[in-house]
Image 1 (cartoon, rainbow, N blue to C red):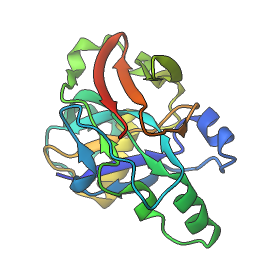
Image 2 (image 1 turned 180 degrees about the vertical axis):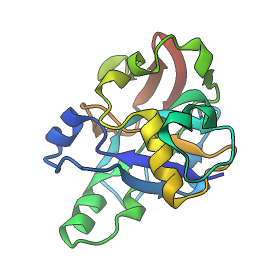
Image 3 (image 1 turned 30 degrees about the vertical axis):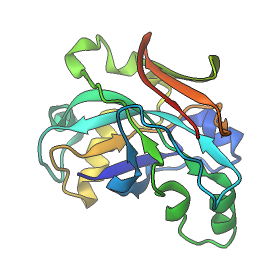
Amino acid sequence: MRIFAIGRNYAEHIQELNNERPDEPVIFTKPDTAILRNNAPFYYPSFSNDIHHEVELVLRICKEGKNIEEKFASKYYDAIGVGIDFTARDIQSKLKAKSLPWDISKGFNGSAPISDKFITIDQFPDKKAINFKLEVNGELKQAGNTSLLLFSFDYIISYLSKFFTLRTGDLIFTGTPKGVGPVVIGDTLTAYIEDEKLLEFEVK
C-alpha cells in the first residue's frame, strides 16, 4: 500500500502560501509509516517548531491499473475518506529555498492521520460537490468543496497512472483548501465529510 498526495490543488491555498499555480498535478508520496489510524494521537516531533494541518479527501484505489484513460478512471476508486497531511513547514521552507526535495517535511512518522471509515462513492450524489472540513478545538479552520479542485479525482487517477501502477489499497490525498495553519500540543483535530465526523484525535 502506498500513499500518493497532490499538492496545490485548490487555488486559494496556492495563494495563501504564495505558490505558483501548476499546469499539471504536483505529486509527492508518503511512506506507510506516516499513517495514523484508530484516532491515535499525533505526537509533535522534536525536529520541527511549525507543524501545519492540511485536511484532505482521500481516495481508496480498488483495482490495479496503469495508463488509465480519464473517462475510465472512476472504475479504479471505490470510496472516499478524510485525512490530515501534516507538514513541517519550517523544514519544507528551508528545503524549498535550496531547491532540494522536501520529502522529510511531508513523510515523517505519523504525518498522515486517516479516517478508519471510508464512504463508498455511490453515497455521493455528485463527486464534484462534496463538502469537507476541519475543526481545531471545536473552531472551524478549513472548509472545502470538490467543485473547487483544480484537477478532478478522475484526472488525478489518469495522471498518476501514467507514471505509477496503481494497486488495490493505495491511497491518494487529493489536496487541501485554504486555512492551513499550525497545531500545538493539546489541540484536538476533528475532520468531517459533509456533516459526518470521521476523524478526531489529539496532538500530544
